[in-house]
Length: 408
Image (tube, rainbow, N blue to C red; front, top):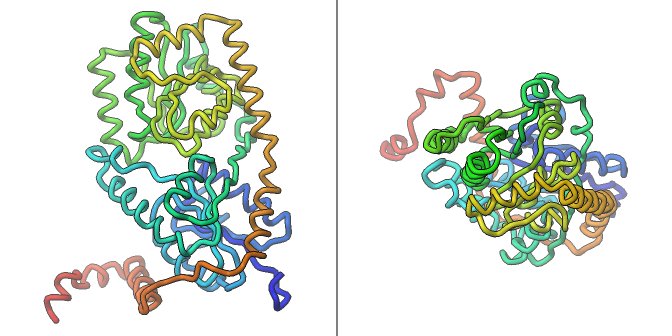
C-alpha cells in the first residue's frame, strides 16, 4: 500500500503477445496470479495476435495508466516502441528477461531480425540502471542478466500451463500419421538458432541406415522466415529425402495430436532461454533426445537424453537405441515424469508475489533518463500514426526526413 493509501497496480508491458507461445502463456499466468491477489493488472502491448487482442491494451494507453507507485513488469525479448515508452515512465520497473538470440544466427537468412537482435541486446544494457529488479525465466537467463551488470537478479520459474495439451486431438492429424511408421517430432518456430538442418541430417542418417519406415514432423510457424525454410527444403532435396513434413502453425488440437503420435522428440537447438516444447513432450510421454546447449540441460532436469556430439550417424545411433529398447524408453519416461513433477511443484504464484512485495518495500531506484523532448517526439509520432491510418494520401505526401532537412 502506498503512503496515500492507494494500492499500486502491477501492469505488464511487452512488444507483442503471441498465441500459443511460451511468453504468451507466462504473461497470462502472471496476470491471473496478480488479479487473484487483488492487484489491478493489465497487459500493454504494441501488437497482439487477433485472438488475444481483447485481453490487451495498446501500449500508448500506459501513459495514462502510469503512476510512480505502480510496478511495470517489462517482458524484454527484443527492443520495441512499447519498451522505450515504458522506460520513460515514472513507474517502478522489474525486467522479465526471455533472452535475446545472438544476431549471428540470422545473418544471411533474416537481416532485419539480425539487426533487431543486435539492437535489442544493446538496448537491454540501458535497463541496468532503470530496473529495481531483473528476473530471468531460467537460471541461464538470470546469469545472462548478472553478466550484463544488473545488480538485483532472480529467477521467476517457467511453470507451463498444460491445459492446452488436454484438448481433444485433431482427428485428421491422427488419421494421416498414426500408423506403423516411426514418427520423429520437433516442435518450435522454424528459425535459424533451432538448427533444424541438424535435425534433418540426423533423421536422414536414421531413415537411410536404420529405419526406412520413419518420418520427420517439424511442427511450428515459419512465416517471416521463408529464406531459412527455403534452405531447409533445399537440404531435403539434396539429401533426396522423403517423408519430411513442415506443418506450419498449428492449433492446440493439432499440437496434441502430433504429440500423441510421436515416438521421439528430437531437438538440436543451439540457443534456448528455456525451451517449453521439451517439457511439453515430457508431459505427453514422448521420449526426448536433445543437444546439450544453453538452458536445455537445466530444462531437462535429469529427464530425457542429452548429447553433445552432432555427428548425424552418432545421433541416429542414439535415436535407434531409445526407440528399439523398450525398458530404456520406460526408464527415460519415468525420469521425464519426475522432471515434470519437480517443475510443477515450483511455487510460481508465491515466487511472483514475493518479488512484487520485495519491490514495494525496497528503496526506490531506477529513475528514467530520457531526452528533454522525449514526450514531444512521442506526441508527434502519435499524430503521424493517425495520419497514416486515417489520411494515408496526406501521410504519403509528407516529405522524407532527408528532404525536410535539406529544405532548412
